[in-house]
Length: 259
Image (tube, rainbow, N blue to C red; front, side, top):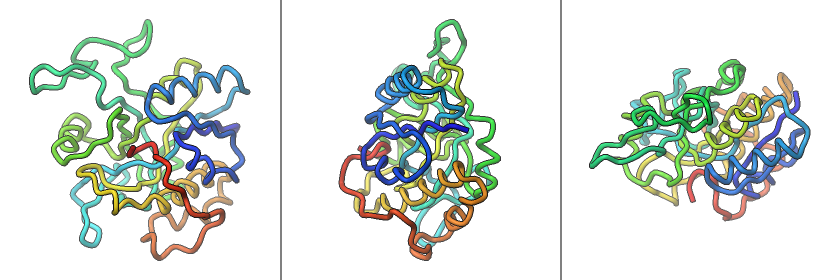
């Protein structure tokens, strides 16, 4: 299957450069992602699958790993920075209207993001997403796309109240999925977890290990069983993993989940 990978930054693209897939750098945010994906689908060969890829934040759940809170996915896997996850669906998290202190999504407003169709901003992932996650031992759940990265516990709780199955926050996935949907191409989202969704704690972010986990997950997708040797390490503590190939230091460019 031909795969088109869409990432927000050149730094992410460099980490994935050795993978056998066409990679497009779209810029940060859902609008940039949708426009670049549509352009790539119109100009290039039609892929069998589009993957929105990058790093992102894991929503805080009830589980604990060591001394830190972690996010818990639908697969029963506890997420922590340095791990990866696969989307079961991609949804716009902040598309709607405020009515005083209440947020109204497009479903509440009776609006749609698609012409001639009823869609409040939610896109089911590629039908093979759950099987891929199961094969690689990854969590699979709802990925929430936002235009402004969450920076407080109260906002994180508000998003979880609206999307109880939320697993990962990013800034491009639903935009990529919308563009793919308009072209009739399957889409999913895969992210390495660099941080937890909530108060901004930049020194604690694990960007390098998140990119390693992303690379391994995409290798598992693209290579199938031959990628499992690398992907098998995804859910072990990052400090206990063996070194991976192409692990040059990542520069300090902005990344798509946390500008």
